[in-house]
Amino acid sequence: MRIQRKDSASYRPTRLNLCEVEVLSCPSRKWGYDPSGKTVDCSKDCGNCKNNKCTVSSGHCREGCVAGWWGLSTGSNGVQDCTNQCSSTCTLCDAITGTQCNYLCIPGYYGIECASPCPCSVGKSCNAVSGACTDECLPGYWGPDCSSRCYCLGTENCNRLGNCPNGCALGYWGEGCSFACSCQGRACNAVNGECVCPVGFWGTDCGSECHCLHADRCNVNNGMCPGGCAIGYWGASCSEECNCASGTCNTTGYCSSGCLQGYGGAGNRQFSEYHEYYIIIKSMGTNPLL
Image (cartoon, rainbow, N blue to C red; front, side, top):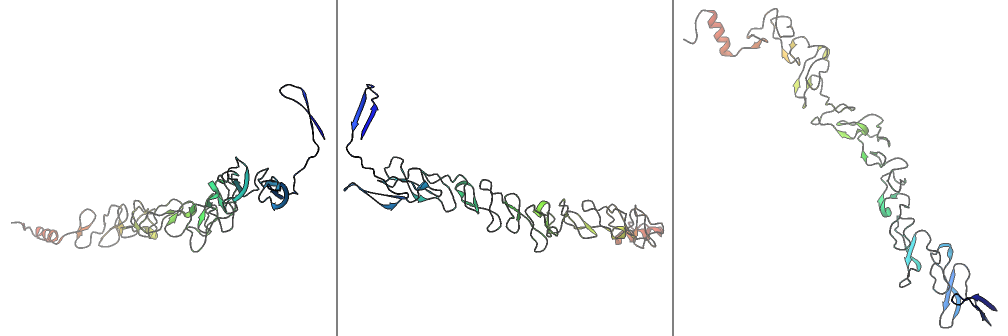
């Protein structure tokens, strides 16, 4: 065989005559070389090499690793042997260091190094970068990443949008029924969170009474009745009794029929025993203080 090339230094033609050329090669996926006998036996597999291509003499991967494997041969100056497996949650990692999964995770995991389990229903996948579920969340959770808790009435669960089929559980309100009522254990409006007191009560702790006409519910913040006071009551929150001799009083507490015995004055309030004694003595023309 004659080989001719142009010498780069002198630009003179150079000829090399070869009597014999030995080509060392193996079939696809194989390698193996005996340096002592300088023979190729092709007895070993290329392993985790991309496209099953490795060097005949060392088995190093010529085109890199297949997905899920990485590694450098010791002292190989960058030659890959692909003998290490990527993290069990990672489908493709850095072929040199084995880190940086690049968000190519197996189903059910997401994030850096694919280390975070998807917060979705069992067996469901999520976005490898954000963790946003591609299907429903685990029972009791909702939101793009299924991180928001919902509290539905009864044993029902909310959907991924936070909708409870039968409304919120007692003590919760708002989107996804996620917010706790601040009503000292009592219920609140499921839309705006306002405390809902039993009929006849109002206030932040529902400890103040109101007596509304037709047994209406009074305003939880100020006790005012929408249709006025029930018969026999008056005042801003309809909590004052009229104490009239007969009939009822007006909105200021005045009784046109007079007061019950022992009551009188502004609002027909009950006199103390001394006050009542003083009124009786005074009507007799005697000063009880003398």
